[in-house]
Image (cartoon, rainbow, N blue to C red):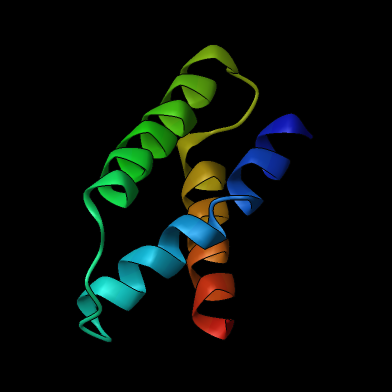
Length: 71
């Protein structure tokens, strides 16, 4: 359950990436650092919990991305 919540909370991170690459908005350097820290935190959580397969993790990330597109 903790992994699902962690992955679902990634949608604001994807919102920043979508805004930067698709909408050509300027991202501040602090946002870039926070994105790197957040993505590395998700990788660390995935590494410590062996309960989910990589496929389910990938599906969670895709779900967060689609949720970010809906914003």
